[in-house]
Image 1 (cartoon, rainbow, N blue to C red):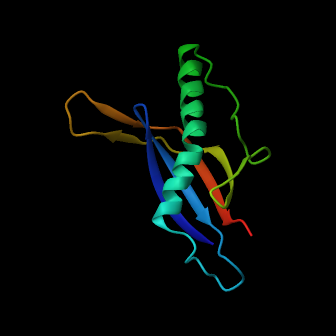
Image 2 (image 1 turned 135 degrees about the vertical axis):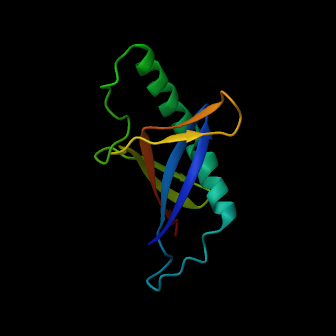
Length: 123
């Protein structure tokens, strides 16, 4: 299984995406996966990421940070589109990170959950 790391910007957050690609057939053939497929995946998942960031911000406003994850390993998001089958879920990261953009007083924060995505080609 191939693995890629992505960062998707959503509002003022950088969301880490851990993308796992399943090979085609049993010969570890990853040639089916291209940069265009990576863009398609980002398009399919954009709404889910936006929703998760929105829920996180609303929970912070209400000081209810103990809210459970919307998608967990027990209940992953499953999508089919663009000839792909995608399974994805959010997991809590164990460490806190900060990311600062070069402009003064403009901060890009790292989202506290990591998005784990598994992709395989539909037959």
